[in-house]
Length: 180
Image (tube, rainbow, N blue to C red; front, side, top):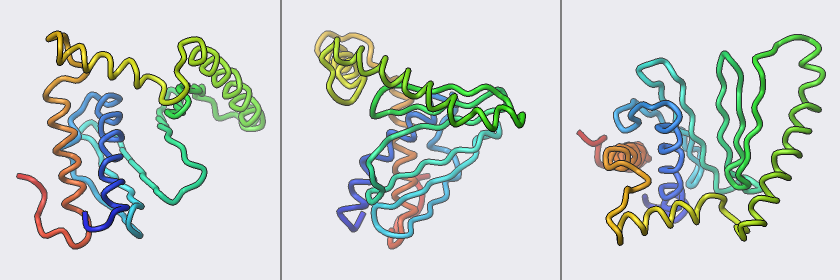
């Protein structure tokens, strides 16, 4: 990437690819990604999986407040995960008038309950930020130094790296094409 903001976005985007792969169980490096980039550091990637799952990954370095979330929409319900704070709120597959009225209150209450539970658990474990990062680092170091199991399979790491390379190739002014 030619700009510092795009370099930062390029370091963030693999997280989205990794989550998409984990949730769909499908490779992301071979998908036909499309990129919208109104300015440096503002990326919106979209693709569809062979099974028909629609994926969208957005990275914005300008959006405030800063947040990291994952929203999964399905026919049997939806979920929103707050990745900064380590909790998720699940929603049932309802579409009635009554649920539409109750929805902001129900999801708001669930958000308060889940975030409080997450905060208490993180405080009890001395995890002030980045829920799960300590565990991930511990597993990674254990795999490296003690020949334990890596938290990620080799094919997953390679697939996410390929997806990142594809995204970089889509940036304006990039001379290279997508990897073959």
